[in-house]
Each structure stands twice: as C-alpha cells, then as structure tokens.
Image 1 (cartoon, rainbow, N blue to C red):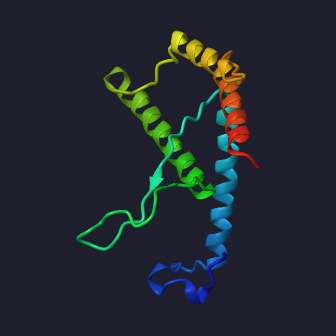
Image 2: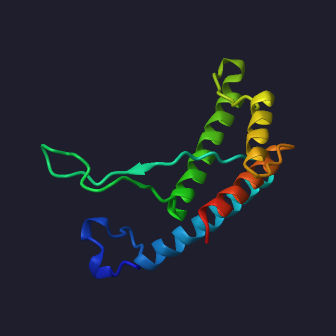
Image 3: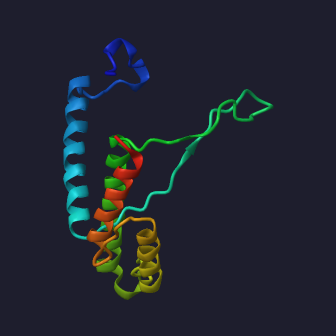
Amino acid sequence: GAVTADEWPMDRRPTGGHSMVDVIRDVLMLQTVAAARRRARFASGALALHSVQLAFNLGPEPNLLPVEPPTSYPIRDSNRLIEEYMLMANFLVAQHLAVHTGRRAVLRSHPPPNEKGIKQFQELCATAGLEVNISSASALHASLERMRRSLSGP
C-alpha cells in the first residue's frame, strides 16, 4: 500500500523543497519513460532471459539456516524501472567512450545466438508441444513470453 507521511522516516523524507507528492509524481514519470523505453527495446529485437532468483528467510545468528523454503523473487515494476535506467547509463557510457577514445575503448558486445543451439532449442520445445519462432530476436522473445504466460497460469 501507499506510504503515509507519518510512516516515512524523517531521515528518508524529501529535502530541498520537494514534497512527497513531488517525489511520487517524478517517480511515476520516470516509470512511464522506462516502460516506453522497454517496449521500444523489445520491439527492436531485445531479448529478456531472466533466471529465477531465489529468496531465503534466514534464522537468527549463529544458525543462519533458512527457516522457510526458498521462494522465487518477484520482479516488480520498480526492478524494471531500475533495469531500464541502468541499461541506458551503460549505453551512454559506452557511447561516450567510443566517441572520445575511439579504438582505445574496450567495449563488450554480446555475440549473436548460436544458430545450432537455438535450432536444437526450437526442436526440443516442439517435442513438448511448444511452438517457438526463432526467425528474429523479437519473434523469439514473443514466443518465450507466450510460453511463460501459458506455463505460469492465470
């Protein structure tokens, strides 16, 4: 739920003339921009391959053994917002390095998917009755999203 002014610790409240309403408005605007950038990335062929992150509720020291079974960490809009701005920052830094240092810049780029491996993946999915379109990165992403939705249920 929403945090009220009384629940917001004094040392974490907005300063410099900003109010809670200002912060909320600004974060919502950042979220709108991040969501549009995310849609544009996927429309132009980006591929999201997230592995499951497990969360553990540990017991008190010195035991520190999990007191409950591990659960998967939910990916929230706040995670996606941060991811988009981290990707943009990485891109802008790489662009700056490329422009200002030329060939001296050491930049990492991802190789294209291994064609044999992706074809084997498609065939494996077909044996399970799952259709995967590997004609492009965006088609593959759409197929994976359809599978994720159908396997996770309503």
